[in-house]
Image: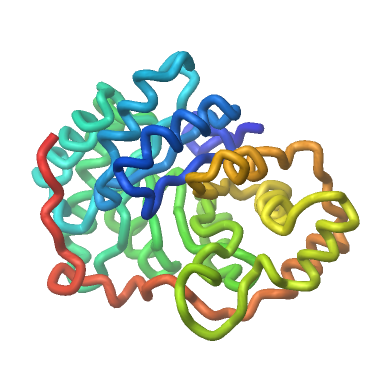
Length: 291
């Protein structure tokens, strides 16, 4: 199943994420994902495992032309020249000349001038053919408005926290209004069960469990199908082969409109990831190593 981005590039709707996957586990996890059938791999400079993602892709018997590689630049590398060099670092670690989708990882509201300069660098990389599509991550509607007023290329993707307990309808609507594809990180609500805090786990939600039982599917499969049927991309992560396979086995499932609405109704409006406005160079800046 593929989605067509606003510049005509096709991207597999279901990707494989490696957030918080240790470098020593990344090669095996990505190799397993590719063997399972995933053709879209999502990583980031800040994850510290781009090199291992590249190793897995190069050692795979899947042709590079069939694999959609997505990565993200970290805030420490914002600014025009810095972002151009950050591309070189990421491409070097990944072992590729061209990246399929390159995102800005955060909006960095306290230094949005650097954010804009970094995005202009992405526009240059796109014009030069070094990336096939560009986009953003964790941008709220106000950040999108400011970006669109000051740049030329509409982002192809906005990767944001979306799961049944935090659906971000205002961001989804803003993305849709600008023909930006919404891509869900923590799509099965992993952040609700691996990060401490009140709110409960999506995997233990009775509504989601009930829908899964009606279809002979797991709660994770129900949530992934919810994203796909509503036109979103989703990038689940796991290092366990059985979970990697389970998360990919969602293409024979069709949720009803009533079931989709029931999952929509679970939204609690509580963000479990960091507030985008809280990300600053002082609090979150880190050096991204050279390739």
